[in-house]
Image: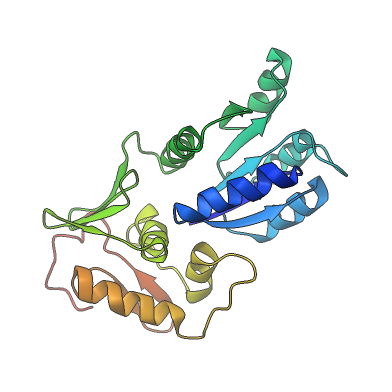
Length: 229
């Protein structure tokens, strides 16, 4: 999954980007408020990690602008500002959670999973339908009671589809969720990834809608295992 990291401190940003990448995240890192505002408007992110003390435009203003245009992407504020007034202002403007520096990566990852679950309307770490479920904590997929480990890109693709079972996602939408800036994406990359996942999970897990994209079955459709792929 893709995350937007907004952090002007080179050492913190580099360390955090490496740590998140090691956990399977595609990280787009920007270092000032104006770039953050532009990237946020153009990207399709699962989560935004937002520092407040930014050059060119303060993080509070970046958050205010995003929420003002109706963007509902989960936001986790990462900041050294420990005043109650700062936290209250950020939360009132639409931040989903606050984490004070310094912090441990494992806590950050847990909080990221939590704000994403809340965005998806789930209090649990497992999303999906009656045929296939995705465990957001272990990054495993469950099909007919059997667990399988997923690669980072497989996880990102299946998470995008299972957020809205039954909805059709285009090639461009899936590419935006799987790959970060600067990554070379071949024209058939999504096709190859889905082909491999069908071999691993079963041919009916991900279905093609000719000319439009791909989807997984909605909750009411998942029992129809014999439907055409």
